[in-house]
Length: 146
Image (cartoon, rainbow, N blue to C red; front, side, top):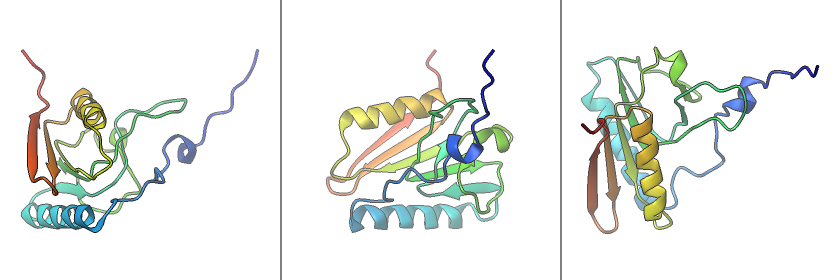
């Protein structure tokens, strides 16, 4: 019988994906503006707002752990505060209700479709995609279809 050593949490759920927050100053400015305004808008509510923070929706025993780092996310019902990442099972199992993606020149349609599918699969209710160069704006409802 082979005994497997548990994988340490920092290996399963790293706090960084090694990717930059933004590819350019236009995208970065939109992310900062969005997160700042959301924090201001929700300051009187119990709400966690973050930008470019890894979200792990489920706990796993072996890598890779499903994850996504929305450009901005809002989690109503969770207190504000510092976190290295958002591990949903440590947050009363509350997923982000709203996520925002600010598109950069390298984003592809298939990448955005995969993100939309991930967000819908793990319980995000509203998804907003904005391209600051073309000014295209997409809104998607993550509620299950009837």
